[in-house]
Length: 460
Image (tube, rainbow, N blue to C red; front, side):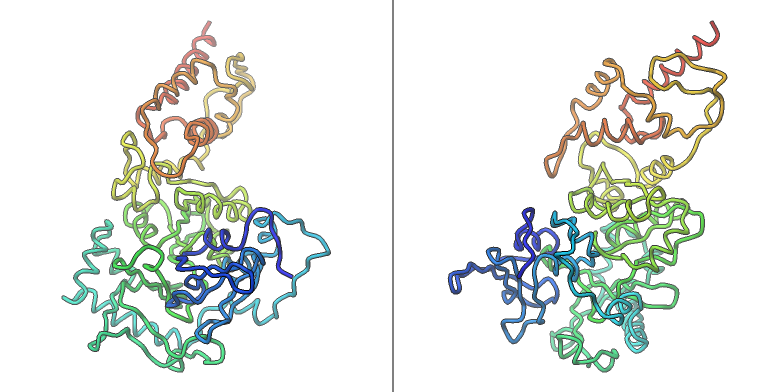
């Protein structure tokens, strides 16, 4: 019997977490079915079926299907790589003895922790080398121009071994036998390995090739990104992580390369590929080496939801450092801001995030509430972030100044209470003085006036 959630029906759940296009619907035996492309296997168009009334999905009805089927719980576990508890939390279900799904075999549990087989890596590396040469040839000019248009320079493009896979002379995709990649025909749904024309982005961990991602700018959204069959659950740029050095986590490889290009001396930047990927224990161990982790998934609902996993898992080491001023870090690099009042460089945004993790020494003790007398004997070093949290409640005048500063701010995108979420919640509780991204924000002035007042009172 399918797992039933009061929060999600199977159609809305899959639409939220995967890129699918509904191409039709039909009533079969009195049950309404929705048809779309399959989120698990690229290339399908209308053979994936979802039945909201029954709460299940299937891609096993037609001969071309990959065979996957299940309910909302199965989808979250298999497609989103969620744990038992995470899946139940998303579905709004309690963990109890009435619902205990079968445990995967040991081989299934361990397989995701391992990189692709040796043969896959060797063949993949050959493809990386050929694609890299092609990118810098006349054939790859359009692809190279696209990367330049995203703000990436030649140095970072070469460093990350980006390449271009063209169409073959016969106009078809590049293809080779499954055996050439060490893949078992009994374990995969395809008869060959086919690689569409597009920008090839390899995911390396040292000399180990984990994943071959494809960016296809000429395709519509939802179909412009994919991976070569057999790719593993990698973490892009994981080799850049250093012990006791800040790490930033973003969604896309282009965002990670943008941050490394502009601020690689300040932070190591990794990409998960999506908000629900990269959750292997080996990557968690790598991230634990960092001094802090700035969780910087895209500025949207999916980014906010996906960041919760990392903040709960890494706890005090991880902080949500949302792009705020733009959709993602690459848009900051390209100066595509959500508001015409925001002005900052990508490097400045990174610096601001790192600054919120640092501890500062203050020359005086802070009162528990704004307006209380300073106790000069309290002494000691306190975190500036903790200090800001203790400056509550803000005075009516302070809030009026904040209202004035943001009176003309424009917000583009999903509806949100910008004042509550961005101004009051973030500036009051997180940002330290002097690093506010809005040059017109009076938070520094409010702080300065308060400090001056307390200093004068001490002299008296």
